[in-house]
Image 1: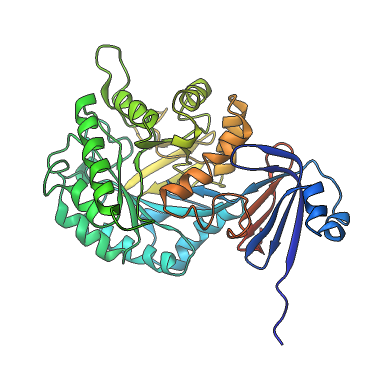
Image 2: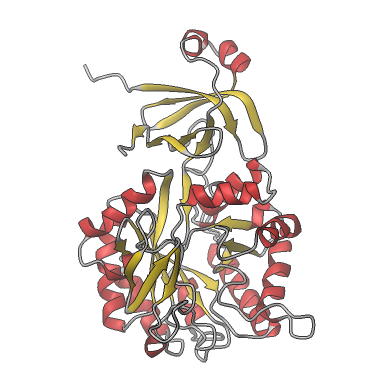
Length: 416
């Protein structure tokens, strides 16, 4: 006779996609959620004996967080790993803080390096440790390259897209591209190759015009719809890589890509990433975007690099040296004591959620943008990203100030 699956009962302020239950109950049996609701509903469902032994609590119960843009943590950089075990250090750093699902993000690098890193990270994807791979570059704007090595930026190359997708063994989920870079748009371009490979293009690191951004949006939306036709569950969504950061600024006489992204998100054609960590964006910017396009079209991300969870000091991000001072990562510049461009984030995704709430974003909206929406972008909405019966038992319990207390992934406690 097999062992009965373990049952875990959690009680507190339960955050659902559109509301917060002030005294709610979440029950996980094995690797699945089996009940989510109020205490009276739990009693009606015959769970009174289980609930009775769990006292009311000020804890907050959230779905496990989902990070679409993450370059590493715990001292390890995904763009620099040589083995899957090494990469797991970064995965576990974020998992302990409530991020139960993430994409491992690369940076612009040589063809050989990108293919090698994709092959290493594919091992983790096949093992279910990560949800796939995000390639940030190398078809990016020189002017808006941020922390990317200018020597590694190249024109759009559909052949490289196909090679990278093959090296990732089907786990390339998204790639950041700039629409104005030659070879990105149009028939035979990199954007088309990404859609054909089942990877979502993400508009970013661009100095392009509004019209160029609109052209990419129109092409990708049409391409994704055509690919999904007659294939239920395959529709995915175009994203914007960290809106505002690495983009020509919004100006009333030269609106640039930001205007196109906001309009596309408001139409429901795009999901915009926000690094709402208090460093990359002013809190008012975060609050305003949520109010403008709605939480269903916003994804909170970390853009974390190796220094997440670590002390200030010297780190690497692909071929670039980075100095972290007062928790802010910048490209090391010997001629400028203040450093160069911001080089990723040092926060965990729960920190970003907390910052968004502090900026005035309602708790349910901030959590939805870090769980339900990114799960939907990944095509995993039927598996995770919310607290609902039948979904995987990925649960984050925090104190009242949104600091982690307990993390379950597939119903199993994550060891901190």
